[in-house]
Image 1 (tube, rainbow, N blue to C red):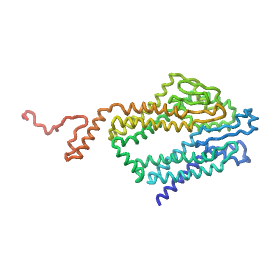
Image 2 (cartoon, rainbow, N blue to C red):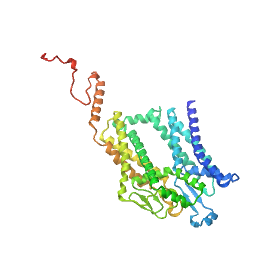
Image 3 (cartoon, rainbow, N blue to C red):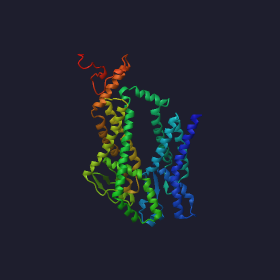
Length: 446
């Protein structure tokens, strides 16, 4: 009965996650639709538009075809009538990922993490199938297979990661416990995988925080250019509202771009362009207001920003090393080096995945190459994090840390023998002491 209840609750969580994502799109679109076309407007395209945008927010590319009358009215070249839009507004994807992780963690606490993750993902996949089959637009089409698989995969990854994180620590009485026991049997190498994952989480959080701060700083420094592009667009209040909501949906995508800029490789805003600390090379940039945040030029001196990912790696190494000392888990140089390498590899994997969903096409022609390149971004960020983590993890251990390790080893040896533990030596001193009351009186000759 409990397993069935967990499966039902996980399915309800998936339905709520999908409903919130669709409602966040449907509610403002309904209001904007009413203001733009009136109460008597044709509402038949509202749901297909909502479903298509929901799929696009989960990484599904859009194949856009501009009608001929629009091409003529806007003076657009015929060769620009069809193009692919694939730079994802990551706000929807991140929300689904976090909501799924929360649901998976709750299923793990109930003791059925695998069933909860699978049932929730299956429910979300059914919703994705319904949305894909009922939201077909003539001007914006999505591949049916990707429209089903990508949203379902996002939810599955989030649910499994959230569930495994809890089940690994608390135990599940099943496959994870067996894997945990097998890893523990590695001796001194047993704590390495968990420490590497923990350190990678710290490194990713540090890089994301620094990138978000960089976007905020650029908004303050170049807010005037953004406002000027808003004015140049000559849109009314309704159009300005739509642009603002779109910018908010793309905020996580901009954070990924900023992370690639901090790491050094930067990103592109069209074929043959580059925006990096070493220099900025731009041609004609689309008049999208948020692109006003792009720096106009760069300098070799700005490469000092690569110290930010190195600092994030150092923060991760410090957090891992402090946890190991607190748990009383002394590790040798080889194990600590493996942890630093694991932190770098996992961070690079996260960076590559983020770059894949944050780059692509935003228009025809040269606008088909936009965003950070996955391989340079992953290699640069992984290498910088490795440097920072290695500095903290491979540095010589403090004498207090060594003294604590010796004391713990002595207590363990005494516990295995018949000697009393109250004779343990002080970690900071190797001299025996005698209570003052047991000393002989002065002048007694003793």
